[in-house]
Length: 430
Image 1 (cartoon, one colour):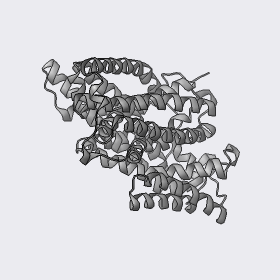
Image 2 (cartoon, helix red, strand yellow):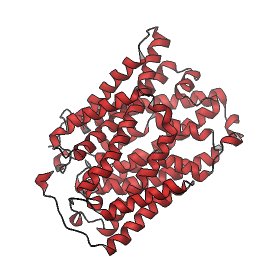
Image 3 (cartoon, rainbow, N blue to C red):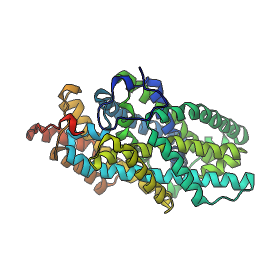
Image 4 (cartoon, rainbow, N blue to C red):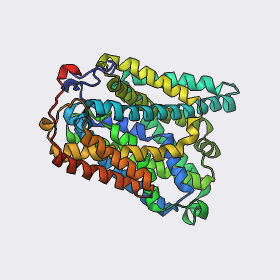
């Protein structure tokens, strides 16, 4: 019997039982909910200040195609093994290596994402009450309240994520579609056809590809936290490709188009300009909710690994992650969004290179050859660090991709030269 949608999630680091696996479309809706987000719209509006419409479309499609390719491979690892990313990665980095190097990095990043999105949601809710209902509600109080609401959904787990997205995604698509129709009727296509960004802010197409990819680099690696609930590799591929690619492309291009048409990069202002103030604010809140819940959910899983605690501690770790994110939301983290995107791409891309090399090349994609490795695996750690260092030092438009390739190749070379220690962790230690 399948686990009821009202049941709180009970597995964290241990293998997801077969009876708790989900249909591919359930996971696809969760993936789509993550993509229908304010950051996606903001990437589009940022590209509007840097690329022409043709260049932006190329950058968006290529950047996300690369991200989805890695998401599918990494997602399949977790669906094969029924385990989250932090456990799957232990065969490449070692359990201690994952805890010290990876989980600190990913927990911090996901907590920061939670903080950023909570600011967006809190401000949207306060603006909605103030402008259209005459109720002056503190932004600080709004951030705290919405942080708690989104945290409760994350604490409940995968079933709450599915329930939330079943309701929110169709509604969000309808409202976004209405906004697009109004925009084209109001402004036409003339502004788009001849649009050229200011010379001083123009970037190369490769830089645009890196920006689109960087915006998804964290989600690309932690996708296994969701896909571990899939039944087969085919289900994982369908959920990832159909849940992520079309929606993400649509959202970023929409952010670009609306920004060019209205001459504004602030999404809430754009929706108000289009005559959708109330619906616009509700879209901001719902889109943030569906995405941000996953941030604290994955952060909670990562913190279970980080502090070497039991599956039962996921709830308290998720609460801690959400609380930290909400505190950060009050510190102005959202104003560092552009830098944060770049840092994500630099640090997380090489993780994907190492994980893909380990599972799909060294272990030939065979779950029987995977094992939960104790201690440090310096082959994986050194390969990852090399990719990150190269990306930071060279800092060119394409450095992020060369960093992934360096980590991938170096891992394979070092694995050939350095014998792998079979220091397997027993299942009960999870």
